[in-house]
Length: 297
Image (cartoon, rainbow, N blue to C red; front, side):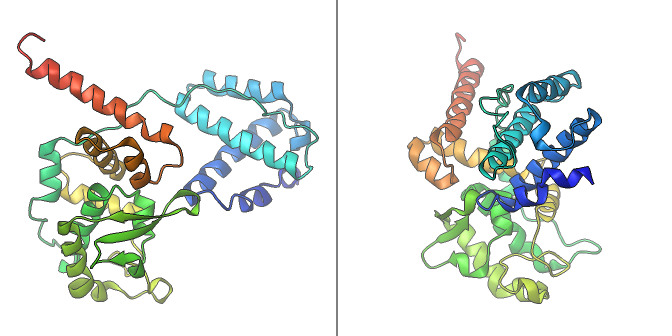
């Protein structure tokens, strides 16, 4: 099979420092490129040149792909061909210096005070048909961690019971690139976690392969991103993605005067430039508030 020549399994296995979601996205992007390349008669990476990659990105543009998607696909190609060059599968790297449209342009959504209050402070909905009442404190702890500690949803789902220090009010998080950080938790989050661990967790912990997991779903398995989305769907006033709570966490810290490097550490960003997007969000909010409230605006 010609497809074997691309060595995708070997490439994805080499991405040991990347988050699982990144590995999956890169593989999907490369599989799409390979389908396109093989339609053009290319049977392996050694037949791909710089012009081929530029034509592929132009093809994506004519198909109406978003700039963010095109930027990610270009990043996948750069990672793949850099690996192919290092492992002598190609003589030269055709993706070196390959440019693509910037993936920027969209500012993160920040929840309004009313949305936050409804999500965090309103009594959780009663357990309805098909639901156990043993998830009240789990659900509360989940939303408190997403907003109060700024966790990514994958980080939250990957937490083990041993990652908690309830007495010290911190949680140890494994972020992107297998980087570890300690994040503080506020008092309300600690209380919700204490009640979940003491009163409810044992009622759902049934999967021996996930015996150390902090959170479980109703099937007794480790909580997953889709489960988190369902929790927010039940509690939120309007459709809310889990990442919006992380955006809101960072923006509120900066609005309150937190140092940008402190926010970078709390979010687990490798680059300060990634964190700086939130300064633009804050400035945008200030301009809107000025226009809304100032009598001469």
